[in-house]
Length: 129
Image (tube, rainbow, N blue to C red; front, side):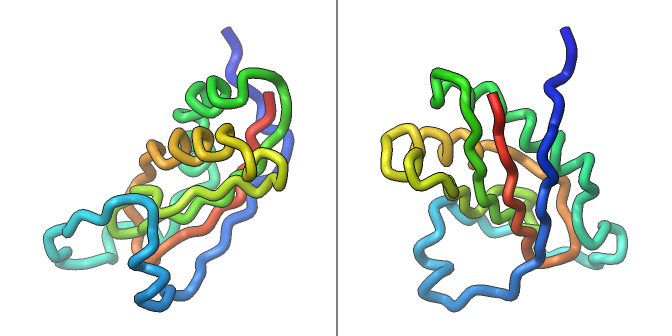
């Protein structure tokens, strides 16, 4: 069995800290982490390969939501402190309005990334089937 090929580029950006009212509306639960002694042991952001690996790990769940072939870009915000997905938003207008969009977002929120020193990382990842 061959690995799925990624044909589209992955865009990664680091965004500034959101205001408190935005933090309160985040969809993924936030669990307190013990204070870290130093961020110097962690990379600034995950590598491209680590990002692709984390998002490919939930590909089957995304595909089950779609049920058919297609392409859907998902905007993912990851916490550097925990490596957990804070938000996942379907960027396709059609899928975003359908129950399929919510299913895809829930599937992508299951992804886990290695922890990193930046506060957060934003990635737009195109799932293609």
